[in-house]
Image (cartoon, rainbow, N blue to C red):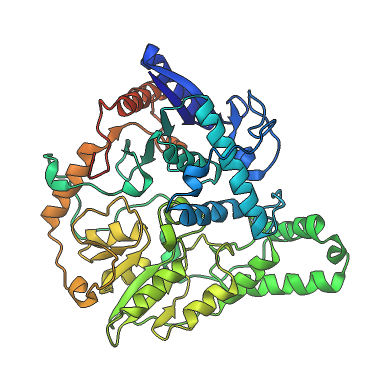
Length: 489
């Protein structure tokens, strides 16, 4: 009998879960469901620290400390897990959200981490949970804690993840196994990759890579500024001189950055002002691609690719500092900011760290990422798709985290002692790349598990899709279907 803990938020994930339970018959029992109000416990309420109840109420009502989480606290990974969780919780702090939690001090983060992991461990033990299923890589604080507590208690975890292959998804038992498999162990037809071309990515826009007109202050941005001051500092809203100075600063930023960049359309904070003023310093410069350089395009943060998959290298400045320590003489590191990035994880000290490195050059917004990758000695990233783009056009890629393409030819995982000249000299056999991609494709599973892709698949039969995902999930839990990733699987 499988007693299941499942994180399933939203109707579409709940449909996957319902199909799994229906097809499992008497072999599977849902012990704990984290989701929204129709679940046992409201998961995101734990992220925002509000008392929204699920069917069983709130997780921490009527609980006392028991030490049920001590297997997690005593683990060697405790420090990294704590850092990851705190960073994920910080994304809903007052600096980055209008309706934020009210944690202000590092001790409060520590206290909440310990209280919540103890409460989760108590529930997992009380329900005799044997298996845990996540329909996405945990990266929202509460789901990360569920995953880590479950693993510390010996619960078998299964994690699903969307893939770059249309209509397919990945699976693994451990998050850090994403990308780990031996292509030689899977006999499958090659996956055709058009030679020398980068993939088309729906979340990237070609105009982000080209020079264009500068922007203008939008009314939406002004409204965001007014909202921020009304909620956080109403006295300044009543100060015409302060409001005028702020609007001038905002207009100056818009007049420097490309018109596709709308810095304050979604959120305004004084930290955002400082970030974009700093960023505007790097505009209006020429970029010479003829020298020896490593190209490092920064990830958008917060997102799964760093906070869940990067480990200590979620700190992208550390990636660049690490590269600089090993850099051959005469080489440079070209750094380009992500076109979606805001002030999160980008305070003035972040740029100060980078500017202290003599070999680093921060590029303007409209520098072409395709040209930068194609002319680099190699590209480097935590887990970014830029690595997949690079090896497709014959450029090596260095990764610092769990990248889904991490076992493909041309990809190097950073470790001390690497010879950067040797990496740059690597030749990527395109046939071998297609063979490895085919082996990975054969290990993927049929179905769409990410709602983001539903609008791009207008003919999707949602009932059939949910039944297929439920069937595969059941097979993964029972061990009848092998997971995509994991050398030991």
